[in-house]
Image (tube, rainbow over all chains, first blue to last red):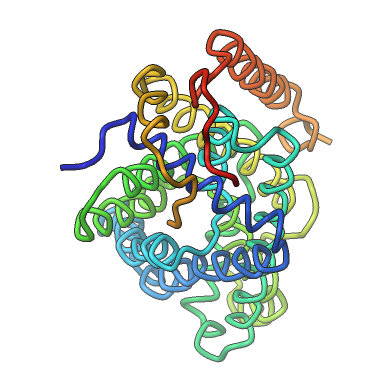
Amino acid sequence: MPASVDELVVRVADICTYKWDMIRRRPWAYLISGFGGGAMVVFGATLALAVSAGVPEKLAPGLANLLMGLVFMFSLVIIMVSGLTLVTADMYIGIIGVFHRRINWTWFIWGITLGYIGNFLGSMIFMWLISQSFAYAQLPWLLRAHGIGVAKLGQTATQIFVMGIVCTWMLQTAAVLYVKANDDIAKIALAAYGPLAFVAGMTEHCIANIGFLALPLFQQDVYMAAIAKMPEVTPVLLHWGFGKHGWAHNQLYTTLGNLIGGIVFVGLVFHFVSHPQRVMEMYRNKTSDMLKL
Amino acid sequence: MDLDYSPFHPLVWFIFGLFCLGTYLAVRLFHRRYPHYPRGKEDDAPER
């Protein structure tokens, strides 16, 4: 049987203590953990790009999304099983830790910041490696990567923002249920659900988007050279900054949305559903305050 | 720059500001309601 909601929030608070203990005492180790986690997210993005290139929309508009979601699934599984860091998980973990007085607001904000920096480096460096490959410089994958870039970077602020909220609402629901489950099969299935939902659901994840949307930017010269021979294609130039088709434009509003999705719709929900008196009773019988994910 | 693509979209930032304030108040009010949460009145928690 899975744990109760009361047991769940206590487990999450113990995970918070474990993580923030590392942030306090071994911040470089935490940064490396974030680097590993960020790279693992874009393992999934790479696979998603690999399998979805060339899938015709006429066949079924959502088919490419399904394929992408199916291969993305195990990104969260390997992150959760490895115990490495994904900042969107830290959002709900940290806020429950604040409620349980394990950390204060300053440490919460610092932990999220450090986790984001580590994830950013891992995501960006991995996708830069992919951009240097022969395989992903072939036309179907160039067109697909650029097409994803145009679609995501061309959205308005509110469009990105709401899908950022939806993303972590779904993804962190899966992550928190991973903690709630007691056996390995259930944990794996629940962790797999998260990326399947957020990718197939066409939502926006800040760390996935760091790399996913950096790839067409890294490859833009190669893309432009390839489509120069295709007069029927009108090129849309992507750029790193703010404004339409800007990487920073998407990243900003995705991150703002992700914060709300994870903290409000997962962290606050599970905290307020838990029963304070039962939680306090559990603390009376606790022998340790740390739990490794 | 079109507001839809500006880094200072007023509606988004207003909602985000409400979220920050609301979350802070939720924690503050909860701790006021349960001042000894989660360890109860006798604080015999193990050292962290």
